[in-house]
Image (cartoon, rainbow, N blue to C red; front, side, top):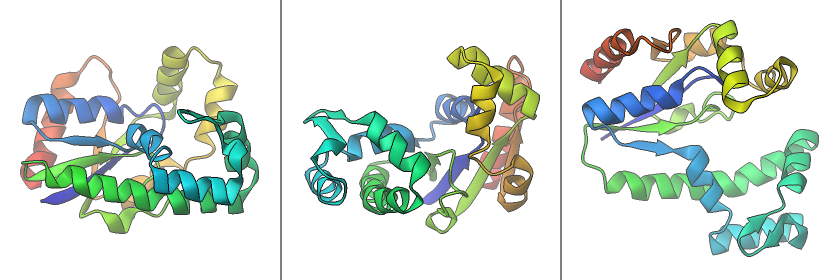
Length: 194
């Protein structure tokens, strides 16, 4: 079974592309963001995080200290690397276990940061979902009801789309929100190739 990473910068529409792969082709999608949230509460991950960052990492048995984590990630590169070094191995064990239960020619691993986190070697194929900067800005501002400066700050933490497109095996262009037919045509081309 092939492992296919599906990536794209914020507002590119990768989640909708994943949904179309699932709805129209029955391709299983592993949402790495959702899965990562659960990893924090696996006992061995919990213990490693407390050992590295202290008890204040968690507010309770079921709640993270999100402010502390955000401060660590955005202000301390070593702490961010340590956090990812604990979290990512657990995430990929979970992905392997999930993948073993799937019956499809390939699975999709949805993640915005495949290239930024140097995860390319974990996959057989990388699909990039892309859209113009103006479209991505508009989508995120509408979805999250925030201003342009807030979105641009988040965009700045991701690699430019142009570079990612060069590294990807396939690029799906998702500019128009109301043109699923054109999107499905591109998805079918990728599907046939895989």
